[in-house]
Image (cartoon, rainbow, N blue to C red; front, side):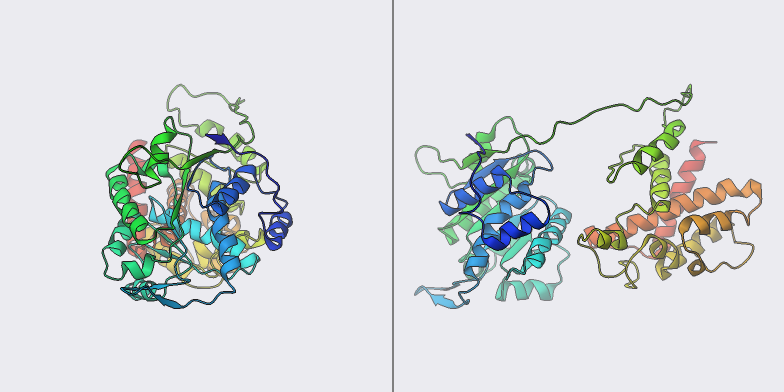
Length: 430
């Protein structure tokens, strides 16, 4: 076991990588440089780091550096007498327990590659990957492939597995602590054994949260000899900032029953307003939807326009209609997909607007909401507001489903989910 110690970055990091860290106001962390050093020595490593400790970047940093150095050497086919493998080809295989996590990591990894103009090709392979792309990946693999244990098993079962994996130099196993304790871990261990046979120079990197028995994970990462035990190196990242845990001391009168935190929503809104980034968790759908609607009105959602302003990776177009760059106003009102959902929901709820309203004529959702609410009699406004909140929430969920899960519903299906939510909400308060 070794705690990550301070290492001079100059001998390990190329100049363009050092400039990239500096441009973001960062300095490489000790465990990130430690993994670079272990990679130079050809060692397999288990990295244990807390959430937010930069362990994903630490796992990929040696790969990005090596691929940059390899770029000058062209890919070519090399015969071994019995078979053919690539001198370039697939360099690193990233395995995640969730396909959505693999897609998310690929999107984040493309940021440093794009900003440093690195000659690196990154692709994902999940159950949603088109067949044409899968076939092309086997003929012309990317430099980095992000996938799941099940997809790895299918790749290894193909006849051209030696051709695909013969050039493999590194396998990165993310969330290793959650993989090895399940049947998927058994499947993955068989896949790793096959990979080590196909690529004798292969090294592995395990990324894990804190575990009680790290030696079990260290054994999992390397081939075991007939006698004795082999283990990967262990690097433990230093702890980050100490958490500051406080409870909201509300000035509102606590209700005798319910415990839904509805009484404190105003103070929660103020807390979110005063901070740049907020992670909100709520077990009650009603509170979750109300908080979401408020965040949307404040234009604090991570929609494409807000991501672009922060220079973060973002979708170039609306994921619901492939229209212009996504914004909260477009996604929820102007988008043709959203308009079909609204028409169906309002029809089912018998909430037809007294007069035709053009959603594109408003400059904000708050302006649209206030003006349309005023068109209804007072006894219908609560029903209308409930429909608005749940419709906005389900449109946002459909947007995320398409981006992260690569699946989709029709406008009618989304409207159906809104109706189900409204029925449950009203039955709870009868």
